Every structure is written in C-alpha cells, then in structure tokens.
Image (cartoon, rainbow, N blue to C red; front, side, top):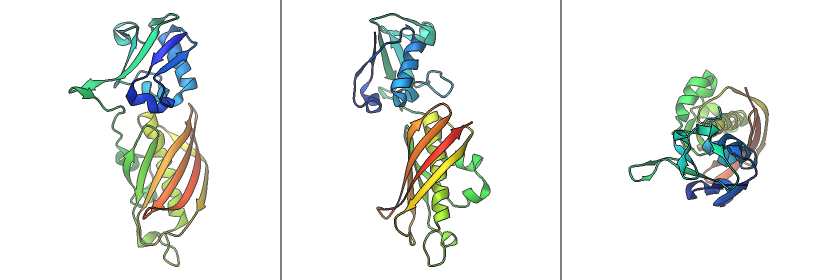
Length: 228
C-alpha cells in the first residue's frame, strides 16, 4: 500500500480527501497510473496528455523530489508516501494550471463561419470553459429570436475549449454526438455558454453544456467527442 498526500489546492478533485491509498507500487509511474484510473480529475492535474509530469507540479517520494531521482521510474515500495505539491513562486502557490489562450485556439483551429459568430472565451478551469456568444441581428431567425443553430455551434465550440483546458492545450478532435434542448428564446442578449467535462479518457470526452442569457437558462446540451 502506498499513500498519496493531496494538497489543499487539489482536494476538490478527489472529494476533499487529503490522503489516498493505492495498491500499486514498484515505481512512481505505476502509482500515478492507478491515480489516473481511480481519480482521473487529479490525474489530469499531475500529468499531461503524454503522461509526463506537468511543469507546475512537484511530486515527492518519501520527501525526495522525483525529478532529482529517476522521475516516474523512481522506485516506490510498500508503505511509501507520495506527496503532490503545486510549484511555489514569489512566496505563494503558483497557478495550478497553465494559462490557456482560448481565443488563440478559436482563431487558429476553427472555420471562418464559426469565428464569425464572435465567440470569446470568458474563463476556463481544470475541466470546464465558459464562452460568450454575443447578440447579433445576423444570427436571429424570423421573429427576432437567436437561431438555435448558433447556440448549437456555440455549445460544440465550448466543448473543444473545455477539452483543451483539461488537456493543457488543443489536440485534434471531432464531434461524435451533440444533443440540444431549448428552454426559452433569446432576444437581444448575449449568451454565456459553459461546458463541463463529465468524463475524459484517452480517446473519448463527454460534456454537459448550459447556456444562459440574463441569468436564465435558455438551452442545455450534451456532447461526445473523439480525441484523434
């Protein structure tokens, strides 16, 4: 049995637990592989999509920095303690995740007609993203309400940004499924589109999306993506 010590800044990823018991041993890589399987949200905070330790996270084995030992091949024996700590800068805990330039991802990876929607990235987190879809008369259908197709495109795009946030950057991916339910019409108002990942594996991602205008829910969606 190996104990993984989780810092306060990352405990929200494991339901508030400060100590995790894992069966794996032998090497640090084996321990982190079990963390990935059992607590994937924490695993994504420790290692990137290539399985490498993120630069802003330090991992210690019985008090020794693994980077000055043998990295993920550092031996871990039964009874050992593995401690995860975000990097420290200027006397305070540094950012837990690299800054994601979501607007650059939009500019570099989306078709012109998607960019013409005017979407901007408001905020991103470890496994979520909020985009703003600005009101435009060009996107209104007959009767003056915002087009449902524009909302669906915004939901789809927000999923890409949420996956990029979780993976630490853009990776090739494609939509497998998109299902949308419309609650009420949007008239003359921007829409905030928040995509939250419900599951992220090596080849598939699942997300729930909420769309609000003036504080009211206007539409909901679910998406499934294949990571290429």
